[in-house]
Length: 244
Image 1 (tube, one colour):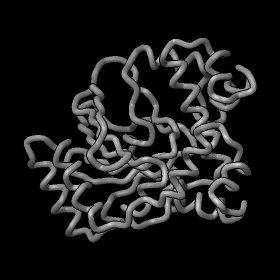
Image 2 (image 1 turned 180 degrees about the horizontal axis):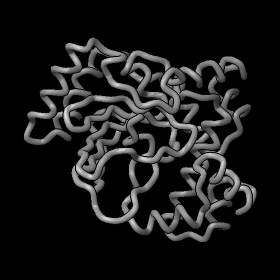
Image 3 (image 1 turned 45 degrees about the vertical axis):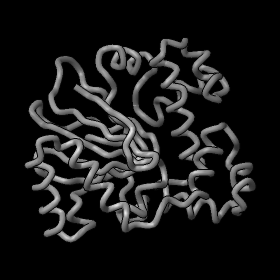
Image 4 (image 1 turned 90 degrees about the horizontal axis):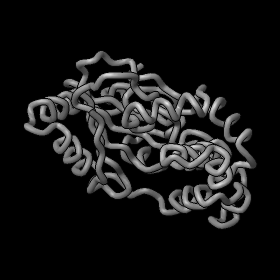
């Protein structure tokens, strides 16, 4: 069963899947986010995705995660987002192994691993620089449907500067981020039962055919297949629970 709630960490979401339910599992779709994951004694990092990931865990696996807003995780983990693009890595690859093992044991032994994982993230965030407000402005502009050029002008960056900053912050360039955010807007409408053509226009696609192409390119799914899965199970958090 999947559950999520807003985190006390600014802009983040805390989620969990502590037991598996019957039926198909939703694929993890690109959303521009990165996650800190705990799963049965391990701590991992899920990098930003450019395509759908299929959860590869067994039926007994337990997961908890802190999903960071787009652009917020690189400062927390201390690594540019593009180095983790489409990857799931052990946190020991990024932080001292002894510290990671100690944190993983603390979370595993806690009465509530979800709450303890969030507490670990909050404590670590105190010593890290806050997310760059310019990056939040980039996300807000693109998510509002503004063009990449207009967004760059609004934040005072040239096209090359924006692209370089986006690679470090989001894992890919602003055009890809804009596509990912637009797809997520459309799928939110689809999950709410909005007809595909209306969902496409509301999200900023030219028409339903445009949305269908973006869906196939970014996820490998058709709109119909996604809607059927969404109706059969509470969706997994994007960018979260696949282990390479």
